[in-house]
Image (cartoon, rainbow, N blue to C red; front, side, top):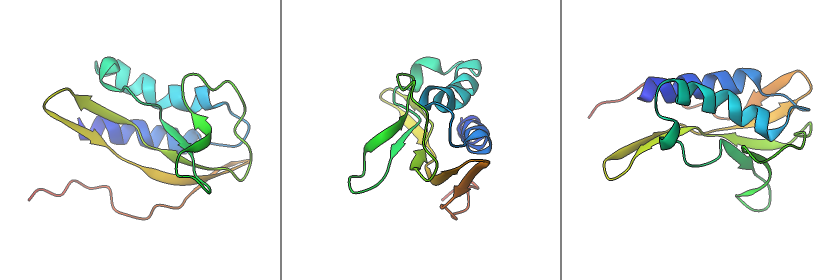
Length: 114
């Protein structure tokens, strides 16, 4: 499950750029999770803007048909949650540019078992 979420996040980050809609960005990650059979387990949007408030526009969500602006800071945080059992979410912050994005998150993404 972790690898599916990581694949979804990586694909979304690799595709993220200013000018695409929040819907388009969300759909990139959502389609990977859905194709893996977990469509009903991704109940939140892919991400949201970050500024003065932690959750603000622009949103990377199925309902946002507006273009994402250059310079916007948004989260890319796909997740899979199995009700009553556990969940996996990987969250990065990116700055959208005309030609892609700059990932501000530098933490490793390998699984650590304790």
